[in-house]
Image (cartoon, rainbow, N blue to C red; front, side, top):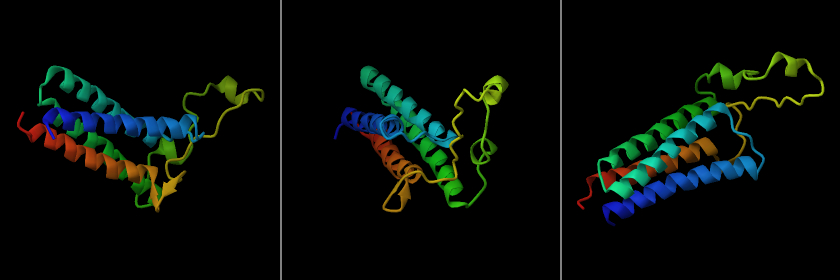
Length: 154
């Protein structure tokens, strides 16, 4: 594959993972936890990096794409550890949080305040691997594709 083709595959890979996350949220009704949301940002960055790389032809952008993929994989590893109880999670996503909700809304019985989504609870898994785990696996694969794109001769 050419550098551009590899860049396109990596870009589309991050776009697909983002689309999947939004589908689980908006179609499947599975609200994301804080760490799930954090894992989305590097994928969004990778898509933008890929678009810049494809339009400018600058292969150095592929290294940034690899960094973005490794960043989301790292957040995913942390998230898997929280899910498995290997280490403590963030206070904002394992103990419940009411951040961003006004006191008036909390005291108003007519306002429905959703329960915070916990990062230490596995909402969905396939073959014993949670969504965070799949993000790690697939993001490491995308990082490898980005590195191939960065090192491939034009």
